[in-house]
Each structure stands twice: as structure tokens, then as C-alpha cells.
Image 1 (tube, rainbow, N blue to C red):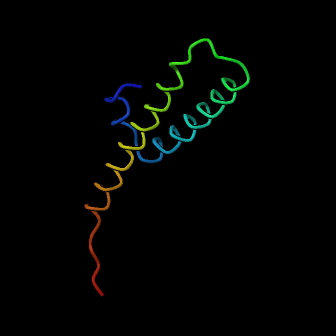
Image 2 (image 1 turned 90 degrees about the horizontal axis):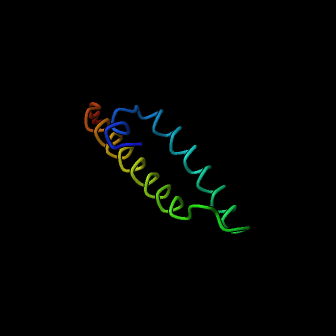
Image 3 (image 1 turned 45 degrees about the horizontal axis):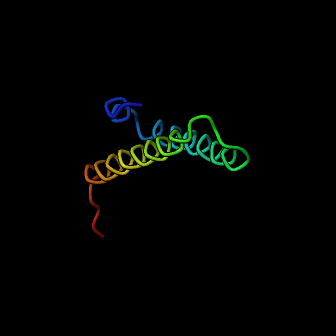
Length: 73
């Protein structure tokens, strides 16, 4: 996924994408441990994509919290 595509996703879509990407990453790591995968650089690429997704998710969460009204008791 490209950065622009990631930034267009909603918070719920980002969470779903992170969950799916992490599952695929875990499966790839297990497959690589059993026998070497054809493209071992995909492991690094997947890990970096998950980091990108989590970064954008956190940015959106911070922006949403900043927009929320502050209630003082």
C-alpha cells in the first residue's frame, strides 16, 4: 500500500488492515522458519508496512483527540 492510500483510510479500516497485515506477517515468519521463502525481503517489507500503518493510525488518533472537546469537572 502506498502512503497516500494509507492516509485515506479511516481509523477502523486502519485497525483492520493492521490486523490482517500482522496475521500475514506472522504466517510468513513461520513459513520462513520451516523452510526458506522465495522472497525473504518480503518479511522486511511487511514489517515496515505494519509500522507505516501504525504510525498513520496513531497520528489520526491524536488528531481525533485534539478535536474532541475538553470536559473539566
